[in-house]
Length: 77
Image (cartoon, rainbow, N blue to C red):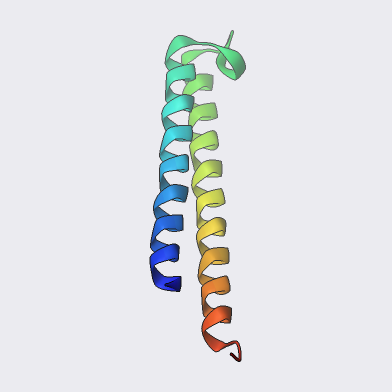
């Protein structure tokens, strides 16, 4: 049961990250929100930084999920 939950949670977290990356790309392409009034080079730099931040957040969520799963496996019943 825990394994099924972990895969579902992992899939959900990955989808959230993919959606956030897609949103950032859309904003950068349209030149809106944080990408307004930036040169092309600045847009690409900001986009790369935001995507890296999102990926790092995803890795942290994944590690937390794996740690909580490992803890529940070793917990006394």
